[in-house]
Image (cartoon, rainbow, N blue to C red):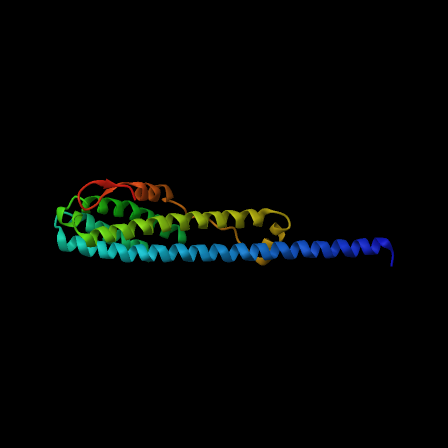
Length: 195
């Protein structure tokens, strides 16, 4: 065998190794995108449960929040029913805004403001909002990495052949969520505390 044959064989083996490494990278990033979306969905489901508790508390203690409670109930139901990721993200964003209004309204109630149960629920909602923001950020980072890997040679050819589709980033409302999480809120005693 001549030296050109060895070089050709080494080149083909090297190309095969590069293709394999890109395949592994694409597969890993695809799995991480799925995992981060599932994590975000779990945090959203937890928020829905917390909001349900908040809605029950508001219905029990205050009459003046009735319209806002009903709006949040409807928005929450729409977010749960949303079929596509984009629709779900838009519904969750609207829920962020409506939940913010509801919490601000709830804090005007003397009964709730001095309730230890409400303070604990508010603390859990704030922590959940921070978890959602972190999950959204992580999800966007994985999707960006995946989409970049898809476009780089030889990942572009692999992605096309293996049907790894471009992923959309559904991060509408992240800025709104940061506003909600950073906003001070009164605790028992009436003074504002940063969460």
